[in-house]
Image (cartoon, rainbow over all chains, first blue to last red; front, top):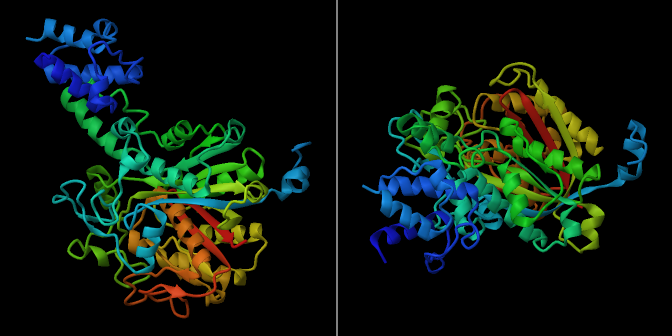
Length: 78
Length: 433
C-alpha cells in the first residue's frame, strides 16, 4: 500500500467510524462505508488539510471511492 | 378531540388522559446513570472541581461541576449509546442528551417498539444555550483559516433541536419532534409541554428533558461577565455552590442531561410498565421585569407555583418536597419568600432543598435533572440535601432546607421550580400513583 493510501484510509476510518478492513480501495464512501454527502465534504476537507492540496468542488464530486481519492491526491500533491 | 371547543377540550374524551413517568435517564457531574448519580447525591457528595475541559487560568471563574471522563469512578462513556461519527459531528450537549434519552427508553423497556407504537412516540428535549463550544471553535476557525474550513456539520451539530432530531432518527420515533428553549426553565418546560402533548392525544409516549454543556471559555466568560457565577471560591470549589447561605456569591456551572419517558397512563398499565410517578400539575409564567434579575417580590415564581398546584387540584399541604431553583445567588431568598406566600411560613411542613449545591446549575438541563431527583425522592421516601448551608440567610427561619444531609421522610407529592433569564418560570407537580 502506498503512503498516500495509508494516510487516506486512516482519515476515512477516523471520520466515518468504520473498521479499517472495510476501507478497501474499491469501497464507495456512500454505498459501502455509510457516508452521506456532508461526510464526503468533510472528508475532502480533511484530505486537503492532510496533503496540502486543493480539491475544487467539481473534482470533489467525482471522488466517490477510496481509490478516486488516492488517485486525485497522488496526481495533485506537490 | 371532537368539536374542538374549549368545553370539549376540558370535558371531552381526552380529559381523562393521564400522564405518568415510566423511564429515567441522567448524565450528571455526580454520575452518568440514574442510580449512581442519586446515590452520590444522597450521600452528600459534590460534583464541583477545578475546570479541566480547558485552561481556565485566565478566567475569573475557574471552577465548575463537570461531567467526569469515562475512566473516572462515576464518569461518562459516550461510546455506550452514541455512534462514533455522531460524536465527532455534534456538540457535547447533544451527546449527553442522546445518552440520557437512551437510558430512559431502556429503563422504560421501550427500545423495541413496533412501527405503530413509534408513530405515537415523540421527543421533546431542549437546551438553554445549545452548541456554544462548537460555535466558539468554528468562529475562530472561520477567522483564522477562512470560510472554506468551516465544518459541513457545523450547523446541525450545534442546533438545540438536534437532540430531539438525533434521538428520533436513532430510535425511529415518528411522533411529535419538539424542542424547548427557555434558558434555565427549559428542562421543566420540556416535561410540562410533552405531558400536554400526551394529554392532548398527540402521542402516547414522549421522551422529554433538557441538556447543556457550556463549560467552555466563551460560556464561562459570558456568565462571569454577567456577574452570575461564583468567582470568590476558586480555591474551594466544593464550597462554592451554597444556596440560602449568607456567603453565597453566584452559581457554579454544571453540565449534563436529564430525560424522562412520559407515557399515557392506560398505555403504561396495559403493558405492565413500572410507573414512577404521575405528572399532575404544570404552571408557567413570565416575570415581565428584567432580563437577568428575578422580580424582587418573586411574583412570577409565585404565579407558576400557584398554577401548578391549581392544575393538580392539590392543596399546598399535599406537597412534601420542593426542589428549589435555588442557584446560590441573591435570588434564592426571593424564591423562598414566594414559596412561603404559596405554602405558608413553614411551607406547610414540606422540605425544600437545592440540589444545585451538589451538581451545580445545569442551565437548560436543570429542570429535567431535578425533576428526576424529585421522582426518586418519591420512590425512596428520602429528600436530597442542600450542601454548604452553614449560615442560613435571613428569611429561612422555620423552613426545612435539608442542610448538609439527606433526610428520610414521607414524600407523597413533589414540586419542582425552574426559572430562567428573560423572566420565564415553570413549576411541575408530580405524585406517587
